[in-house]
Length: 254
Image (cartoon, rainbow, N blue to C red; front, side, top):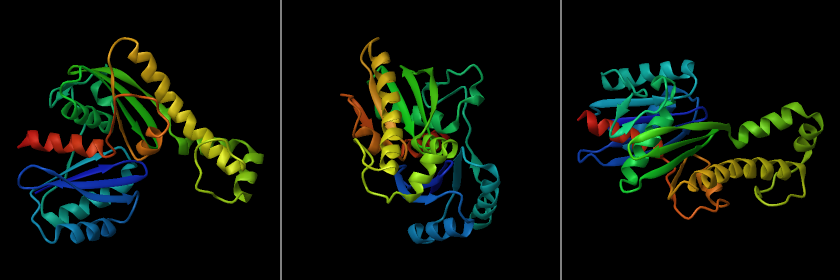
C-alpha cells in the first residue's frame, strides 16, 4: 500500500493505492491539524494495513508539515517522500522558465488531467481553492498559467479594508444563499466573490477557446460551486485532481 497526501493551505486530503494500483480516497481534514488526529483517521480507514511508501505534496505552511512527517515516519518506519514539480513527468512537460516555481499542486493537476483526457489536445486545468489557478496544456506541453485570489481571500480583503462592510457582515445573519442578487450585506459579499472567481475562469476559457477546441478540467474544493455558474460545454469536474496526479506519480515509481 502507498499512502498519498495532498496538503494545501486550508485542507489535507489523503488516499492510498491498493494492491492493484487503484486510487482509494481516504478523506479530508481541515489544515493545519494535530498529527494524532490525522493518524487516528488513518487507523479508522486502513485498519492496520501495512504501508510501504508515503508520498506527500505540500503547498501549505511548512511549520505544520514537519510534525506530521515525523508522526508518519514513527508510525510506518519509513520516511515520507515530499513530491516536487519536475521538468517532465508522466507524459507532461513543465512550461515554466524555472520548473521549480510551478506549485506542485498545479503540476500534479496537469498530470491528472492528461491521464483523464488522453485524447484531448488542449486542456485548461483550473484549481479553485484558497487561490484560483489556471494552466493550459497542449498535447504534453504545459503552456503556462495564471494565479488569482479565491473567494475567501477576496472576502477577507473586502471586510479587512472596509470598516462598514466588516461591521455589516458581522451583524448580518448567515443564510445558505451564495449566488444571485442578495438582500443582506453578508450575502452580497458571498455572491460577489463567487461570481468574480467564476467570471475569471469564464473569461479565460472564452479567450483560449477562440484558438480551437478546449476542454476544461475543474478541481479543488470550490469546483462544484463554480461549475454551477460556468457556461462551458466540455467541463470535467474532478475535485481530487491533485491526489489523482500524485497517484500517477506513485504508479510511475513502481
